[in-house]
Image (tube, rainbow, N blue to C red; front, side, top):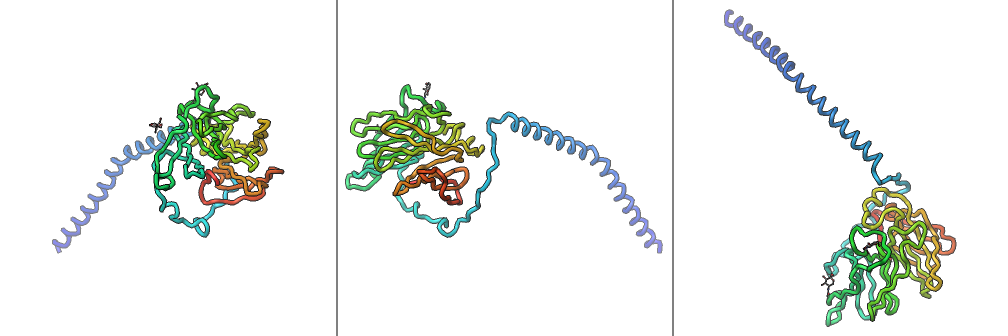
Length: 303
Ligand SMILES: *[C@@H]1O[C@H](CO)[C@@H](O)[C@H](O)[C@H]1NC(C)=O
Ligand SMILES: *[C@@H]1O[C@H](CO)[C@@H](O)[C@H](O)[C@H]1NC(C)=O
């Protein structure tokens, strides 16, 4: 009996002990909890202040992106490895490529140069020496930005011995390949408002008409991320008459209009809108969008 009582007492003592521990722990935790709350509060206030400052002072006016249709990577869009089997020629961001009858390839690079990749001696395309056609800088030319200190040739097309280039910094120019002399045809500031981001073009079969995109009225290529983050639609499709030098803005309000490709009968021109994951077929008489195709990723150039 006394043993059992003793055990009971001990048990009660233990209970009392643990109650005391709990109260003590409570007392200790209270200051810790309130400092946690204060730091959460301060962090939240700083976070809200930064967001408010960013919202009011950011140069980017992000717009709501509507009508984007999610497309699954299946059917014609299923992931494939077709491009993995080719030969890799290391160069910096070649955007566009024109192939000549003599197996030479002409490409524009991110450092501003237009280069010619010769075939190898035994005729393999892309396997020979790389020859500089331009330096990437056109001294004294009107430009959309000086941030990178050189041009950025994006669209490239070859007609005979004339290599036509749409450059995001300098506008549209033509290089006479035998002499490598360069002539500017469209400066970025000859349209209103001035072009900020000339991008790509196509030339009609009779070589009289050029259709080209200015991707943004706001940001040059050197601020590409701002254009993508903002998602606004200040891009234009412009028509240029090679004989009279007349320029017509035939379509505006495009959302990052990018590559340009006429279809065979020239009744429509294909223009992707990069920030809307979409490719448009635009009528070359009415300039209406005849149809479009939603894509699972951002389209860029088109050929
Ligand atoms: C082409 O230009 C680049 C950049 O200026 C230079 O580094 C390179 O040596 C040039 N290549 C040839 C073959 O002259
Ligand atoms: C762009 O134009 C400005 C003003 O004329 C000039 O100072 C600058 O060197 C040009 N930049 C390029 C990359 O041609």
